[in-house]
Image (tube, rainbow, N blue to C red; front, side, top):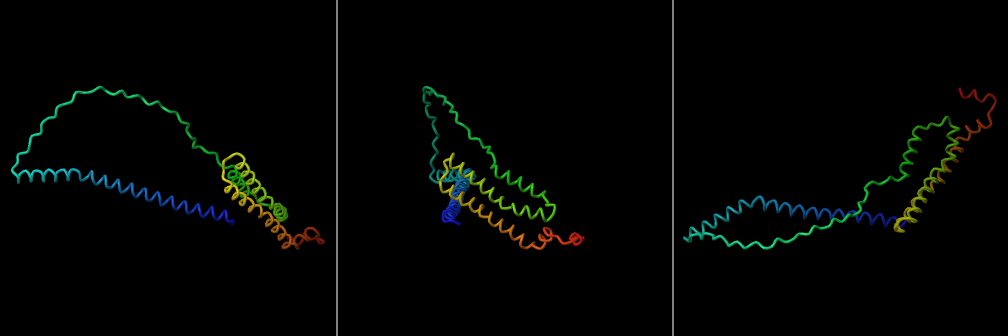
Length: 208
């Protein structure tokens, strides 16, 4: 793993943790404010009654007669302000429908095809193992073209495309491993292959 890849992964994890902590603090503040408002609303009748009792007790102890509130003179209504309608501004809506990555559908189809495939015999297995190195090469080539398209047509950061380059380069390295696997098959099954390529007289009698 390169330093750029490790730094990006570590930075991404720290950023995710910081974002979660920020969301938790915002939720905690919002919840506390909501609980405080609810408590104030629920206790409002009780606090009103207590205030009325205190006022009545104070008037009773002082012997003062509560003053009768006088109606305040009504002011003449002024001109009604004109409210101008705000013009509606049309904004383009961003479509939430996104097409899937073609590489995913192609890989899913590959899994479905292989699940139904059974080689006819060991000679077909040998041929298929000799061709197996092409699988990582094709996958790496597809990812390389995908990365080049992003670089050519999208404002993507060069650090991201560099990590994509390391990604498909790592997959391409498995081509050599597949070739070693085919060579190992030929070595391990050398006697079986020899009997097929240079059969003895009535060799088929061993396959009873």
